[in-house]
Length: 249
Ligand SMILES: CSCCC(=O)C(=O)COP(=O)(O)O
Ligand SMILES: [Mg+2]
View 1 (tube, protein in one colour):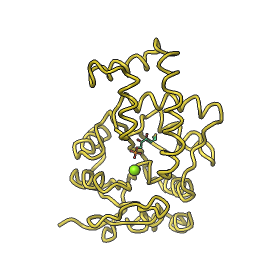
View 2 (view 1 turned 90 degrees about the horizontal axis):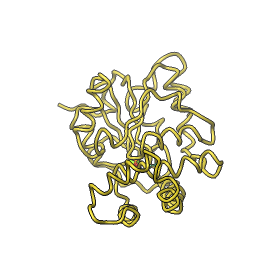
View 3 (view 1 turned 60 degrees about the vertical axis):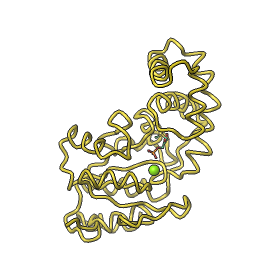
View 4 (view 1 turned 90 degrees about the vertical axis):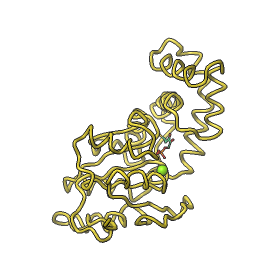
């Protein structure tokens, strides 16, 4: 029998977090980050063609879409929000300059940083799993409105381990880290990602943010924000005062 997160009394040791729709508003990704990358991709391809990261991504595009000019293929992928590695790599390189020049600052949901700090202080391992490249994930948490919070995280996983809607990707993360599936709580807004994580044995809870209009899961525990997800997963009582801090985050 599978226990619901709300029924589990042993708290998770690891919290694995999605980004878009979970810690960062969907609108920030789609109205700020994606358009920024779209505006800068052509210049990146032209100006940094010899950069190994750019050349490697272009080679990957040619393998995935032989005969299609890379810029055209990237535009097609962006039109459908495709989660493919070379696009994510190149978007990350565009954003890098934006964050460093002060044009981009990650507008995380207000509950996120206080919750992450409380969990970290309680000894809970924090990790990220996003379709955005690992460098892009580090930029988001490196340039938040609350400063650089990357040190709160022990690990970052991207499409290198596979797509987020595939159970095998979560098994890959477990194999790489040595974490036990039952010790890991995965938080995401997307039901198909929660399905895949649950199939791999992870504990899951959907973050259904009102602002994002998330389609509420009928299959998994649901929380309105990170604090509520933690309470429902047995984390509000960990350590002296952590419950209060998490509760107020
Ligand atoms: C981490 S960079 C911005 C997010 C992104 O590029 C993306 O495709 C969203 O993916 P997620 O897996 O966080 O939903
Ligand atoms: Mg998401």
